Length: 410
Image (tube, rainbow, N blue to C red):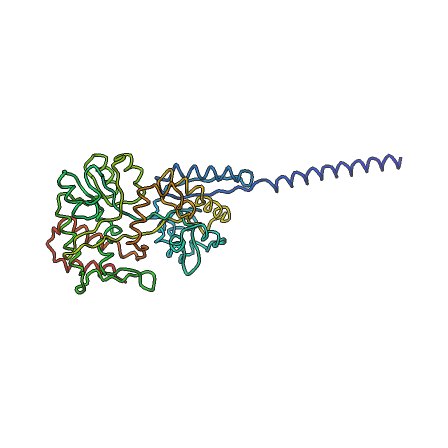
C-alpha cells in the first residue's frame, strides 16, 4: 500500500514537473519574441516613393529582430522644426530637415549627439559634417550636399556665352518672346544680389538675431546700387519673378527658357528640354557699372532622430540606413539629389550630372545659410517691391533702411 501511494505521489510530482517545464518553455518563447517597434518618418512629398522603398528594405534587412510598424508621413522640410517643436513627444521619430534648423532643434533638446559620430564624419563630405555640427558635436546624419541653386537654361534659345551674364540672358529671352525667372518672393534667392558686394548679413553671437549692412551708404557697392540693379532687371520684358512651381509650369508651356533653381528640378527639366538643357553657375549682373558675380546660400538636408522617440536605438539605425552609401546612390538615381556620402559624390554617375556639376561650380560663390528668423519677411517684402517696379514710389534708401531694421530686429 505504501509503495502504491509513493508511486502515485511520484506520478503527481512528475506531472507537475512536466507541466512546469512546459510553462517555462512557453514563458521563454514569450520573452524571446520580437519586440514591437513603431516608428514614424517625416519627409518631403516628392520623396514618398523613395522613402517607402528605403523603409521596406530596412524592414527586410532586420526581419526577425523586431515586429516593425514603420510609416512615412509627408512633412515639408522647411517647416519641420516648427511642427516638431510644437510637440516633441507627438513628433516623428525620424525626420528630414534643412540644416539651418539644426541649432534651434539642438538647443530645444529635440536632438541628442550621435553616438558613432566619428564613423558618420568619415563617410561624409566635410561641409555637410560642418552643417550637422553644433559646438563640435554631431547632432544629425548628413543626407544631401545639394541644398543650393544655380542657373538652368535652354540651349535652343540661349548660348553658353549669353548664359554667363544677366544682361545676355535677358536679351535672349526678350528677343524670343520668352522669360528668365527667379523667385524674388523668397529671401533665400534674393541673397544672390547682396552676397558678393561686401554688404553683410549673418547671425549675432546669440545665435538668434541678425546683423545686416545691406543699407550701407558708403563703400564701392552701396545698398542703393543693388536696389537699382534689381529694378533694371525687373524692367526687362524678359524677366518675371515666379515661384519654383511656376518656373516648372512655364518650362512645360515653352514660355520660360531660363531660371534659378536647384538639383531637385533637374529630372523635370531634363524631361522638358532634353539635350537642350544647360546648367551652370549663376551669372554676373550689372551693378554700379561693373559685373558682380551672383552669390548663393548653400546647405544640405539632414536626417534627425527625435530625442523623445520611444525606440531611439531603432530610430538611429533607420536614420543611418536612410543616409548610407547605397541609399544615397538610390536617392540620386530616383530624385537627382546630390549625395553627402564621399564615395557616392566621387562616382562617375555624379560627375556626369549637369546639375551637380553646376552646383559645385557655384559653391565657390556660396556660403552656409546661417541667419535668424527675422531675415526672411523683410527681405521678401523689399524684393517683391523691386520685382513689381517699386509701385509705391517710396524712396529706395528708405526701403533699404526698413528692410535692414527688420532683419536686425531683436
